[in-house]
Image 1: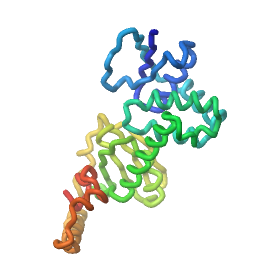
Image 2: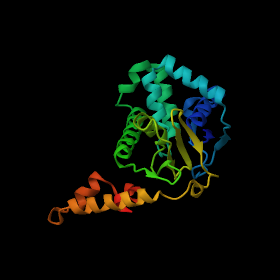
Image 3: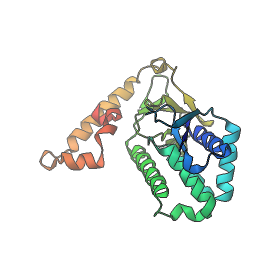
Image 4: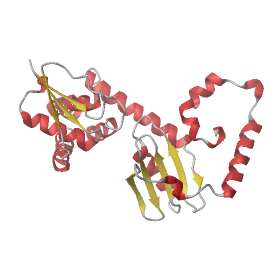
Length: 254
């Protein structure tokens, strides 16, 4: 039997548009798969590949349907799942919505279903990474007084970090830059924050680190070294509590 594969961009709106188009196609859920177009594709025989152009109006219709006919909690879980780096996430979200429209709000706790399990696992992965970055993210003050932090997350979590720092640093201009996806959240004093595309932004134009900031960084490194107890060094435990992948952007390890 022929399979129809809808290929969409890696975004919530892209996935929702593909779901709308797939549902509207009438091909039947069993004959449809949704995948991300910017991932490596292994083309299959007897399959028709259908490119999806993101349509924000159709995406909004899917979002409203989820909130109304399943639940707001299910919608939030889907949003977090869409932030993961999982290749199969678009199709998992599609299957989850199909089930949700049948079972209603109770679907969110039906862990015996593989799609629900996957949504739960993706939510946990995103939540864990956000939790890590809330503790591991490091700002540096630039000469223009802007606080700048760069991260290299596995998942697209930068917009989940923004509310936390907007609440704690409301009177500072700051930027959190996701180098992997070339996006950033930019906060202006008393103006809130926005997400921006940084693919064509030259961050060197922001200016170098403030001289006083460099002195403080050296003092911080010296402090971290001074409190270390050589006899109690436990690299394995350190890696469990502070994975190596976070260290390249942390002051005490640079």
